[in-house]
Length: 217
Ligand SMILES: [Zn+2]
Image (cartoon, rainbow, N blue to C red; front, side, top):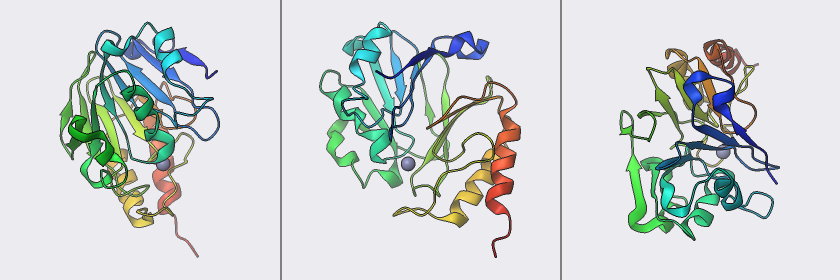
């Protein structure tokens, strides 16, 4: 079973935020809050990443799942949403440009979002930053006050960044998105895959921007 981390043990600003680590080709799942939880990315929803036992382990019942945010509509982030929908009816937030892929299956629970939209959570609001490049509707979620960035598959730690060779990917776009994220003040970065960055995430983002925008021969 995937491991669960109480991120509040590593950073004061992450009290009541939990990470369910994706196993194999599966995204991380972040759970923000407890009573009216917001689930950020849902994993692939297969047998090794079954979502519900982990949410229940956190004390989260179906009625406690208030919102689901998908940083983009790739299967390894989004298919777990259908597992969640088997028992709960949260609103599902997807950038409008990524709704074409699978989001039509969410029906009236779908909320299309775009640049500058604010998504309230139980803990703090998250602002939508449109960060195309990995997919055309990828987004990052930022809280300015706490300096937290949920970076999806746009920025990864240690100078890494998302693949841009998929169906709606674009190198030019991801460079632009990394440049945009590099202008934010980010202390804590929670990416779609891999380990969290608990301090000085700015440095990681700058490194990613520099890597992506270096000349190619
Ligand atoms: Zn992806």
